[in-house]
Amino acid sequence: MEFVDQVALVTGGGSGIGRAAAVALAAQGATVVVAGRRAASLDETVAAVEAAGGTAYAHRADVTVADEVADLISATVTRHGRLDIAFNNAGILAAAPLADLDPVDWDRLVAVNLTGVFLAMKHEIAHMRSAGGGVIVNTASNIGAHQRRAGMAGYVATKAAVSALTRGAALDHIGDGVRINAISPGPTETTMSLRPGESEADRARRLAEVNPSGRAATVDEIVAAVLWLCSPRSSYVVGHDLVVDGGATA
Image 1 (tube, rainbow, N blue to C red):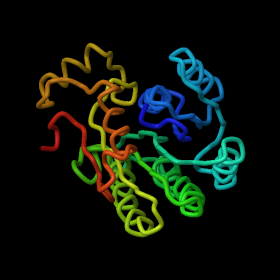
Image 2: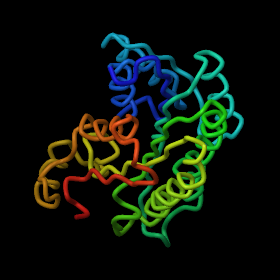
Image 3: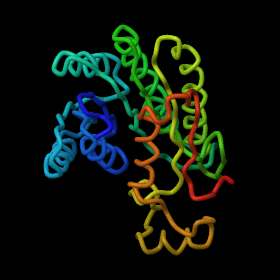
Image 4: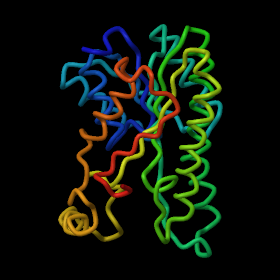
C-alpha cells in the first residue's frame, strides 16, 4: 500500500496502459482521478478500479484544451484536497511517410502528444510546488528519442519532444520538490501496437521475429515501471526517460 492517502491523476485513463495504471495505483492505496475525452471509457475504468476494491473518479477532459486541463487540476484539488502523483499518459498514433502526412494529422499529433503533456505539467506543477512537491511521469515512447521507424516521422518527433520536455521540466522544478520523469514503452499488448488489419496473433508472430524478447510487453510490465517512478523507491531519479521495450533499442 505504497500510495495510501495520496491522490493520483491519470490522463488517457480510459484504456490500455492508463486504465491498468489507475487500477494499480488504487490497489496501492491511492485515490485516482482518471481523465480522458470519452466518458463511457472513463466510467469503465472507474468500475474496474472499484471492482478491485479501490477508489476512483472520472473527469472528462481534452488535454489539448487549456481551460479543460486547468479545470481538471483545479477540480481534482478542490474535491480531494491535494495532488501527489500525475501520470500524463494521453497520446495518439498517426503513421505515414512525412511527405504524405496530412497536416491535420500532424497538428493533432503535436496537440495531443506534446502540447497535452505541456498543459498537464504546467497546471500540475503549479499546484504541486505550492503544496510542497509531487511526482510526475510522462509517457514518451521507445520510438522517438531512442529509435526511429520509417513512416512514423510525425509520431517520432512528438515523442522525442516529450522526452526532451520531461528533462527540461525536471531541471526547472526539482528545486520546487516536483520530481519529473518519463516512461518509454516498446510494443505493448494494447490496440495502439497493432498495425492496420493486424490481429493479436499476427502481432505476436511479428514481434517473435523482431523483438529481442520475442513478444510484446503486458500492460502490467509497463505499469510496474510507472509505479516505481511514482514511488519513493526512485526518489533520486530525476529527468530520466526509462525505456521498457524488451531490448528493442538496446
